[in-house]
Image (cartoon, rainbow, N blue to C red; front, side, top):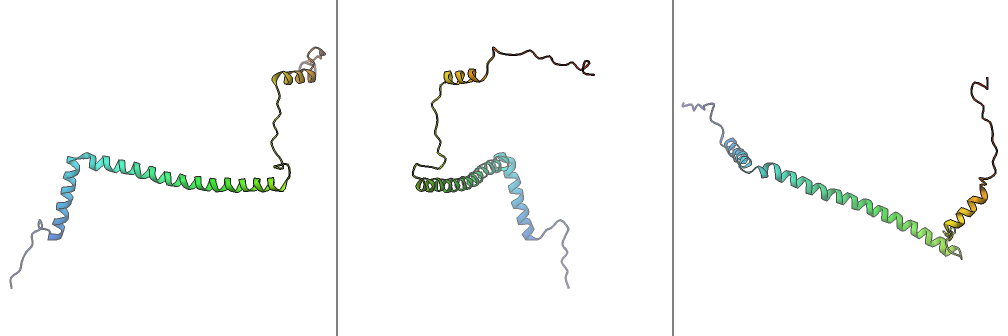
Length: 124
């Protein structure tokens, strides 16, 4: 019987194949650092931006549906009432001069009374 002795520094053929490919990859990463560091960074940035855009588009779609529902409610109120929406906004044309006149009528700065305010020592 003949016995074959394997030495410790020999590896099975399949593991040497993986070791060679890992060495090639390491060498490739050392030669071109862009592939090792830049490409993953750029790909994460681009894919992250696309993912966030997709998520934001979903929230915009939901907001649009809610706005459409509110608009339908307003339109049905208009159809129910003859004069338009129930609580319609009716702006008034007011000038600053008219506001000043109204304020002067409310507050008269010429008629006033002096009132004595008690000091803390006098109140005791």
